[in-house]
Amino acid sequence: MKKILVPTDFSENSIPALDAAVLLANRFLAEITVFHAFRRGRSERMDEYLESNAEAEMEELLYQYRPHLKEGASLIGSTVISHPVEAISDHVRQERYDLIVMSTQGEGGIKSFLMGNTTLEVLRRTQTPLLAVPRGVAVQELQHFMLAIDEKGVLESKTLGLFRKLADSFGASVTIYHQRENKRYQAPNLILDAALEGIDHSFHQEVSNAEVWEGILQYTEQQNVDLLCLIRRERGFFQQLFHHSVTREELSACSVPMLLLHERG
Image (cartoon, rainbow, N blue to C red; front, side, top):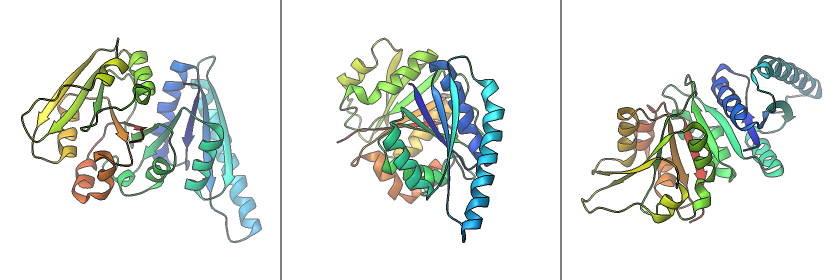
């Protein structure tokens, strides 16, 4: 992992994402780009004011965080006048980042993420892995990862490339979580075992008629999970999450950082 993008609005809620990015940059000796996009004002003079203010806030932020970086890691900033979602998405396509780190806002951690804020829109428009960090959560040493899968498991081992790098770097154990309604046992996907070879991992199957996300939340809390990973496809249970009001309410209580990966299928 060499390039990390951290979109920010300079609010206190955006700080957890930058803290997490610094942690990762120091481990992988990566470059962090702090990116701020703001809408145009009502006049050219207003645009000049907004731009000047944004650049000043960016310089202050970089000044505060650069001392926390190890030698080999770096931090740069960029400000643009544009619609935030479009600007971030375009920037990601042009620069090919390895990871986007964004803070989620809302009373329950990732509630507003589910309700369609900038984080969700960026996720929908890009194919870059995204780490969503709930407000107030300090990402430190990550020891227990959880990968929630649906019936398809994982279609390609490369999908878990970044997930594996993180687990390996932190020496974390991985629980592969799958919830089903009947008691018939379904073995883990062979691609999963191959992708996680050398990583301490186990398979947990939950038999329940409850909402899948309710089960995920309960397990993350009971097992002290430090990082929850989901795979987003155009078709699948993760995509259905954004169209189910009950699931949104359940997930509003989640306080675990989420690594969101993309896979076709």
